Image (cartoon, rainbow, N blue to C red):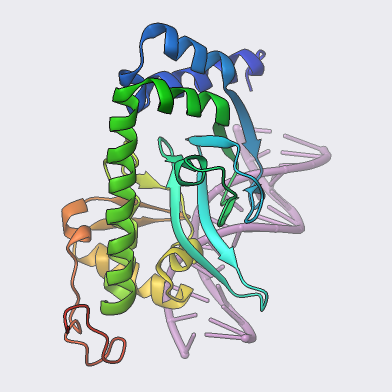
Length: 250
DNA sequence: TCATTAAATTGTT
DNA sequence: AACAATTTAATGA
């Protein structure tokens, strides 16, 4: 590796902060201060960045790697809601009130995060209108994502769930990432989609045959994002999916 | 650089 | 859930 890893890491942290979408809303002085007050933290694969119940005192941006947001129940079962990867920010919901984390954030592989302290975040919220505009858009995008997840959960058969969960990782408002490649094992994709690993394996090859993505070892590459986003599979009439649940039946 | 090994991941039943 | 095959990563010559 590099002979000067600390300096290298610092510059990557700074580059990540300065290239983030909200940075454009800040004056040069404001941004310099944010850079000075923030720091980088490494989270080992499988380790916890924060866990449910702890006080929320940072806003986190992913420099490299992947965080999964999940809850583990007392009986050992675990439900994963969504994943945040390179370029994504997480935690604003719990920072906007004097809150505690309502879920766990676990690194699916070695992950580096930018940590913006609560007081820095609060200063921006109370002093910068453009930053608030960014936050509003960001939170709105997150709301859309979760509404989509409810639809996925209630309406769609396994292959479509996998397709849409992958698509949700590339929401342009939440994750302005550069590439179309995600390093996630099929097991982890299954957790995100609430589909068994075996069924995820089948689904990925179905989607590959249809030209929507490419399957690699320990990763996938998205080819047709709109196609994944709107994917509806053969048994979408409800006969073989979840029994009888419809969103539009008032 | 190459061969050997363990670990992780995939593909199939 | 179990098993075999494949890929990667780590180690040492």
